[in-house]
Length: 166
Figure 1 (cartoon, rainbow, N blue to C red):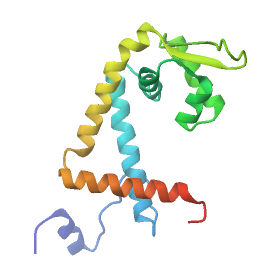
Figure 2: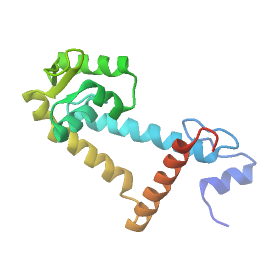
Figure 3: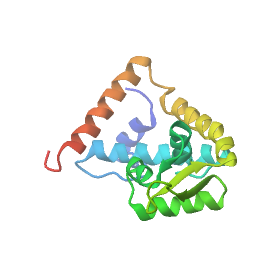
């Protein structure tokens, strides 16, 4: 028998405290996924804040950096958010000088979103924050474990997206 804190608790008849976050009895996978998601978001927000970027602005910046100017409706689809939420995000980014929106020359009802000089200058810091977050997320996993995790996460995502009755 070892002398770990869990052994001491077991000997005392107590159970270890639950992880800070949501733990639902009978749903260990969902509970753990939610705990991981929250921890990932917390660390990501810290890194992005240090880089001078506000989440989810970095996602828009990185998308525009790779695509160039795009219709706002494309960003709504890409982000998987409702139109009003994306509009509010883009308005905040305009106020911060990161993006500019203008009517489409082809369709007066559509808005085209593009990076400003300031937005372009922020992209490398946003990308570096995501790379550091990836490093912190995976550093304790072997390459094989990382590959298995990617397969498992894709499988879970696809199963959840396949059917609401799966």
